[in-house]
Image 1 (cartoon, rainbow, N blue to C red):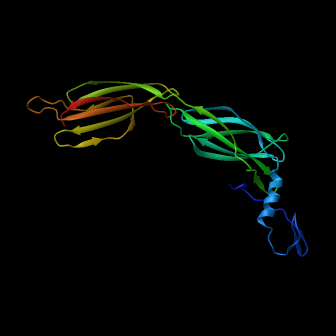
Image 2: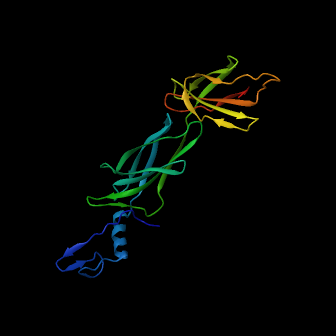
Image 3: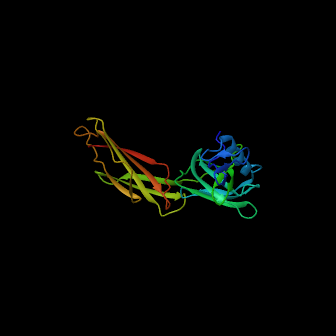
Length: 254
């Protein structure tokens, strides 16, 4: 496993000679060996660890997940590298330098996350050695980790439809819960003609909570109904979260 994100080369340069930290002098222009660099880098990280990693709070509101917490590392580390995961997928990373106590706090936000289901958040951390000229991730073992689960309730909805005339169906929907109103309607109509096999679907579109739909009544024997009209409704709350869909089906003559 690759031990470091960034490599640090410590060189002492004297006229005409490049001196190695361990071993004899190198001829001018000759690069230190990988073994030498590894020894130098290991010295920067020797004894470094993440001694504390906490999630103070984590949750979601309006489809945005957010949280915060604290961390502490041990000498010689003075900072931390954090990887943020939502549902097992990496959604961000951050390098932070600590205070005089080699500790600090973190904060993270991400959107969108869906409502109505449980999600997982995982935080992975590595100690950092932050110098004036470089940053070295001390990855001599597996990362420290902390995790949490979170969820947010979707809004709920109601739908009622009646035939208001010989050619129209009137529907009224409503919303509740979620992150609150005002609520807007999300509608979709689907027509299927059983005689011709024609099929039409509008796709979801925004509208008022009340809507009318064209659906002519059939005339028995002369012109009976030959199609189905499917009316679907979802409520969207003030922060864009949507309820599940409700529907009604009516026979029509198209």
